[in-house]
Image 1 (cartoon, rainbow, N blue to C red):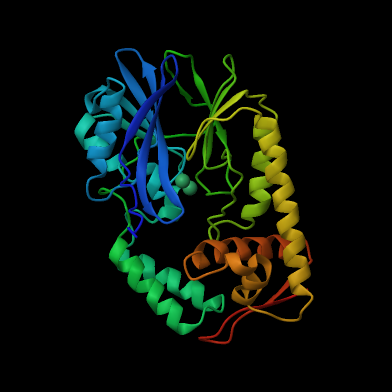
Image 2: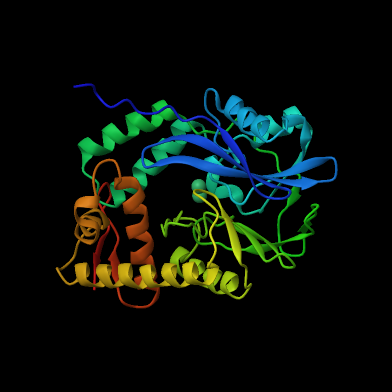
Length: 333
Ligand SMILES: [Zn+2]
Ligand SMILES: [Zn+2]
């Protein structure tokens, strides 16, 4: 029997509306095979919203996707990033150098540590957080090795030419796009809203397949911030969302409600897990996520578990006992 071969992902481009193209770019991450960049017609060129991650061959994927819809890198007039995660802004430095276009991004992008940490320092910082969450030594070492091999996914020094904050508009042939601050998934997250056409570029704040993630450790309560961002986006009455991963989707209001419901369900799960007595975040993640919590998914799910715990701590429903030096924090109801 032949072993199933993994289909090699390549960059692909398609038109979704007159003047809006989806550029689907491959990612090296298990479970997240690609991300979207969006090209929007603007005069004699395009605004590029998000860039894909930087890794060997990544610029060729972007060029291939652009070529499929009759565009070239030279058409990029402005680079706008929904948030500072490598899959959304990793190619911004190289693209800025190639096209001469300005990079616009929310000023709270420090959580990416794009310029102030070496890849080695980033791994060391995250190992320390994992240790404090109670991750055992052996998987921690294996994870750190893998991370060192992958690198940061950013194509050079991140230079931001303009702060992407409310009041700033991104002009295009489809009209002006308003900046909506939507922290939670990441402190620097914004959505772009085109009110006349009721379009929303939703980044990772709202995805077609409901999937939560919180880049925690930078702000007091990422889950609370995410819920407030859902309220803000829910009020916009958008009819079509162009998301950071997956296909465009309608029923934006339904997706907002589904995200809220999943947050409530997970918080309930953590409340239940806390009744078993003082536990580390690692132990609680195992109880909350069951079989889904594996070595592959541990960093992702552990980060979410810490965010849930912080949310409950803010509401007076969980108490943290800080770690002894070299040990892990424990949590109780
Ligand atoms: Zn993200
Ligand atoms: Zn993403």
